[in-house]
Amino acid sequence: MALFNMGKKAYVMLENGRIFEGVSFGAAGTSVGEIVFATGMTGYEETLTDPSYYGQIVTQTFPLIGNYGVNDSDCESKGSCVSGYIVREWCNAPSNFRCEGNVDEFLKKHNIIGIHSIDTRCLTRIIRESGVMNGVITTENIYEKKDELMSKVTAFSVRNAVKSVTVREKEEYRAENELFRVALLDLGYKTNIRRELIKRGCTVTVLPASTTAEEIKETAPDGIMLSNGPGDPMENTEVIENLKKLKEYNIPIFGICLGHQLMALANGARTEKLKYGHRGANQPVYDILHDRTYVTSQNHGYAVVSESVDSAVGVVSHKNANDGTCEGIRYTGFPCFTVQFHPEACGGPQDTAFLFDEFIAMMKNAKEAE
Image (cartoon, rainbow, N blue to C red; front, top):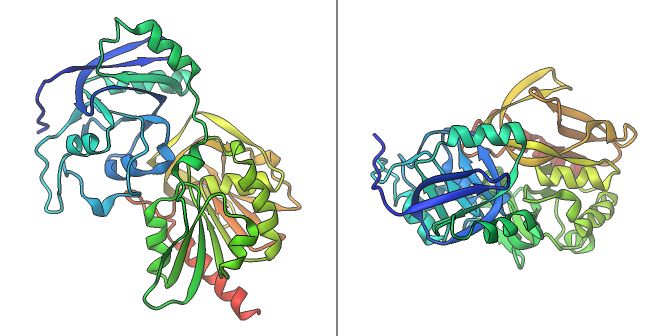
């Protein structure tokens, strides 16, 4: 049973003027962001620590959050980038042998404003019908400051997202039995990407998003990983220019989520903003090349426009079974493949974890060909 204490009021106001009243948990204050919803039934710790949610107020569609608590081992980054957290019910008496605290304590630790006891189903339906929109979450009396807050809401946009979440300097994580060296370009990477590489014998060098193609090459990598990350992909003009140079080195490349989008832009394709994005652990993806469908974990608000992918450069390898959007590209002129979904999914389905093995095989073939 969900247990919580009724406390101070909190409010959510959407850009369309709709106000939801609920109860505060986590930090107090006011925060503006883009309101999105995530459909995962588990994995709220990963959601709260995924840098891809930078600038966003996250609504959990699953009605009960916090029943197994939180612990540092499940975090996908060193902190939290969400601008606010919205749930129907939160559990302040979690029960799990790995539990190190509860969600309320986590939110307070990272200064995140939370709200519970609102109709998240209604909120989700509004977003599905109207599309993602800006909003504000606050513990102040919203009716006294409505006009002031609305002006901030309408003026808000997610800017400098990748620059805000990437590492500031190079970090190295060594594999016990090193087989390969991988340069991981940090666009807002999830820790499990690093874990999946290390357990396959890869020493991982995490590099800031601003690292140039030449500097990446100087690390002498056997392969390059382009990570997930937040924001509008077209904002990252410097990274896109670096990727244009990087592909000339013929080093095997594997891109995930934002990395997938940026590589597509570097090769002349276009991206578009989706109405309400794909955020959850139940997205069906059709593998065109192998005639199979996988259930995947996803977190993105933009997608590559399939029709804009030049057939002379690459082919669309995967598509979303719900809306037909591009979910993967295999490049033909250089050793690279990218996917929109998360093969490192945690929590979420692990149907596509084998893509890391394909990356390993690509690096092995490149080494043998030297």
